[in-house]
Length: 189
Ligand code: GRF
Image (cartoon, rainbow, N blue to C red; front, side, top):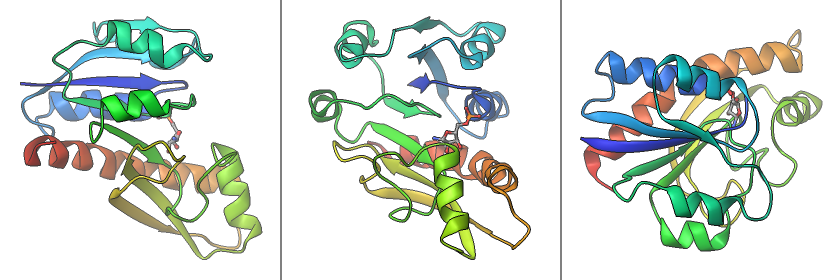
C-alpha cells in the first residue's frame, strides 16, 4: 500500500477527485494518509467528510519545517493539489522526486512567480492563445519548473472568459491528475 500526503489551500475539487479515484480503484493500492492545509479551506472539510486525517499548518516561512516534523515516515508521494505556499529548497532536496503539483496551464507557458489561479487564465486570454490546459509535474526548487509528467489540452475560443477557461481546465485536471498519480506510484519513485 502506497501512502499519499496531499497539500491543499482551496476548494479541493482535485483532492475530491483523488479520493474518488482511490475508492474506485483507478489509483490502485494507495491511501491518503494525511491532508495538510496551509490555511482554513474547504479541502479540510472534504478530508473530514471522508475520515481522512487532516491538519492545518499555518502558512509562513516555517511551513515546510513544520510539515517535515509531522510528515509520516512511510510517505511515498506528496501531492500539491491547489496548494499555494512555496516549498523550500531544503524540503524539495530531502524529498526529491516524491513531490508533484498540478498547474492550470501548458507549462512551460504561463508558469512561474505570480502565475496562479485566475492570473494564469487572464494571461492566456490576453495573449490570445488558442489552446491551454493543465500540467502535472515534479516539484523542484524553481517555481513550476520540474519535469513534466502529464499534460492535457483544451482549446481557447473567443467567447472564453477566465472563468469558463478555468472550468474547462478543471475538467482536464480531473482526468490527468489521478492518471499521473497512478502512473508514478506504479512505476516507482
Ligand atoms: C487547480 O486549477 C490547480 O491547477 C491549481 O489550483 C486549482 C485548485 O483547484 N494549482 P481545487 O482546489 O482542486 O478545486
